[in-house]
Image (cartoon, rainbow, N blue to C red):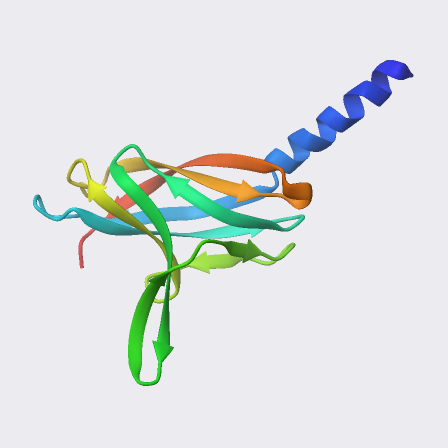
Length: 140
């Protein structure tokens, strides 16, 4: 019985680590001299979480950004956190929340995949990371 009581908290933590689903991650291909791109995907958390950061070995810096209309002008700004309400999908899209990959270390070539690490804050302030591979789609 004592063993079971000691293992239960570990099982709960493992379930939380797998709490966030990442679906259809993608980024746009770049031309040789372009040093920036965006990354898009759908995130879903069963228990609720907050996206608090991201990184990739192909970029010097990755930031969470938001596009939104202010008056009749579309503006982009960096945001520090993106809440993921429990059970509801949150889309990262070119015209909404998205990741900006700055200071690219290599050209993003259509048909390849790039690694992106997403950092989340879970209930109780616990932090977990999810590794994903984003498909590089055609530059449009």
